[in-house]
Every structure is written in C-alpha cells, then in structure tokens.
Image (cartoon, rainbow, N blue to C red):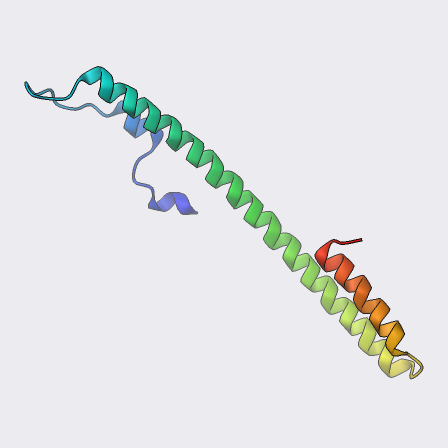
Length: 106
C-alpha cells in the first residue's frame, strides 16, 4: 500500500555504482553508509508490512463488532416491542454486555 511511494528498494541502493572522480568521496565510507541505509530500508519494509497487517486485522475486527452491535440493537428493539415489561435495568444490562464485547473489557 505505502510501498508505491518509495522510489528505491534495498537492492537498488546496494547495487548502485557511482562514477569515480579524482576529488570524490572515500569509497569505503560511502559503502558503509549505503550498507546502513540498506539495513534501515529492510527494517522499514518489515515494519510497514507488519503495520499493514495489523490495520487489516483491526478493520476486520471492527467490521465484525459493528455487525454484532447492529444485531444486538435489533434484538433490543424487538424485545422492547414484544415485551412491554422490559425495564431500564434490563436495557442497561444489555448495553453493558454490548460494551464488553465492543471494548473488550470483562
């Protein structure tokens, strides 16, 4: 998802060759620095993939919980219409159960 905006891959950085000039940089220093950059890119790629997986899992869980909330609200509405003896205490208990499911508290 985010990787479309990244212009260089770790392999491209590692394989990059620079022209040598008489007053150029020290090749060993440049190579060491590029090695560090490559390692960071590899770490960033792993972090991005892990975060994308977490977002996907969270979205799926969110959808599941929304569906469950709708179902429970429908059941409460049916109970209100079918049973006029439903008290505020009963409704508060049901709401409490829904909150436990939604927010994960027990």
